[in-house]
Image 1 (cartoon, rainbow, N blue to C red):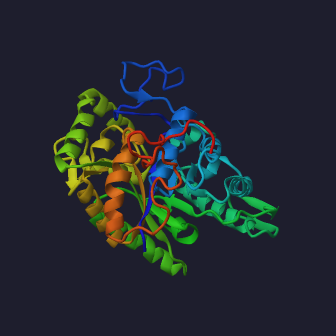
Image 2 (image 1 turned 90 degrees about the vertical axis):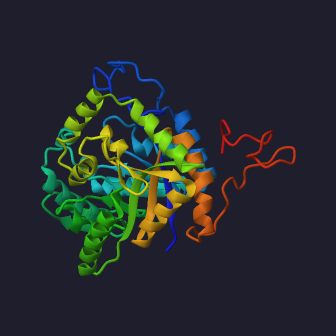
Image 3 (image 1 turned 90 degrees about the horizontal axis):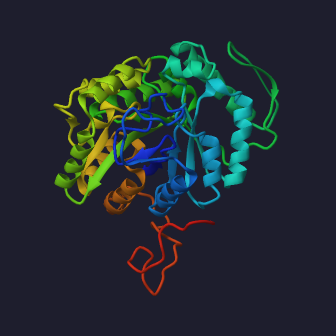
Length: 401
């Protein structure tokens, strides 16, 4: 079992700080800030293309694109980026409650043809009723997972290429059909820590994703899902979602983490914790429990730092350390059966290079990566120099494929 490395596309904005662009007087609609936040980058397509090209050239297999009110639409953004990349896959996050499963199956099939087979799907059931209602979804937490279960049954059914009938509580489909099924079928990624989520994963998904909890907690969760899947006669693979701060020395990495904390005043942290505490997501509550809103003990496991979760929802932990230390932690999670590592860092362009040029060679040397095209393969050299050397061709090309 090899390690699969994925990066992240910050379609909600990026920057050199954990204080994000959502800190506005109007919730982000007009972009008027309460107080100025320096170093924030808008998620325009040119910047996202830089990150996608960097991820491809550094050897990442795919990039995750999030979903939600404050993000650009993942389907539209990533299909545009398929036109400026060649090998990179796109892990498109979407909410099943706001789209027909038959239409989603058809969209996936079209995407596979446009991208030449580079689509992966991240099904996000949703753990925040306020956010769900914003999109017209009024089901409670557990019923949303029950609907996701039916949704995925319909998607897989209509991918068969034959008319498919389904009658459930949430969907009734007669003769559902994807005339030209996707080839290959996209792998389905899914996460959820609640009792309602586990059976959905066991019955339907290819890869179960967890946020970056300490190894012993990750093992408990993967053992739980593995047991449920065995009862269904299925095998589920596992992935983990983490941030990274990897540097040439451990001291430098922890200094960088400390600088991210310097931007966070007590009022900002308190407001974020209050908002996140209202989430119905069991996974989100588990993230909050790792630090309890305190800065005092943020290294919750060796090289696992919970500082991101003081102000950011979702994945709230980062691997922090030297390149070798970060590789050690990835190897530790891998020994527990974790295969897919969906990584990110602030800012995403620069951190992709720190990880890709620092940690990836460490993992390759340990035999954890599949042999494939080396990073920067196909990028032309100039004047006899490698593309990455001073005076060589630029790593990021402004336009074209």
